[in-house]
Image (cartoon, rainbow, N blue to C red; front, side):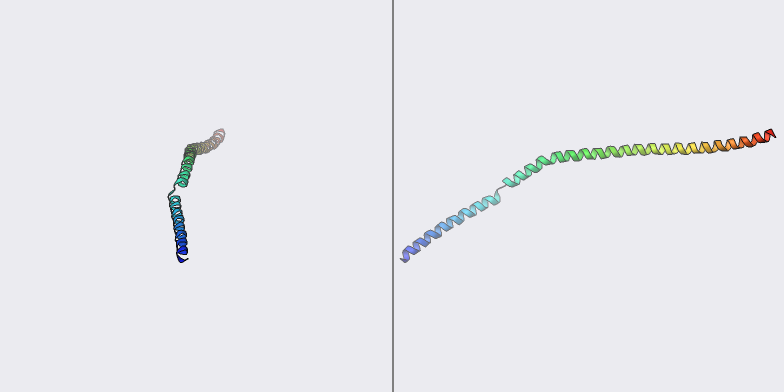
Length: 109
């Protein structure tokens, strides 16, 4: 009877060992399986080019806007300069007119 139990236990141990060996192999395969990582990398790679293109387009738009602002600033500076000159000429003209009135009054007297 001990021999039969021993044989049954050995058989059970052998089966358990084989099951564990299979589990270790499956786990090792699962750990080394790169399918998920490759799928994620492929998905990321397919999504990045449109994002890069969009980013480039936005950067170009910002640069164009900056250049337009520089152009508008130059125009504004030109207008401010012209306005200052106009004010100066207006002051000079007013002074000239005032002087002419004084001279005209003097000449009439």
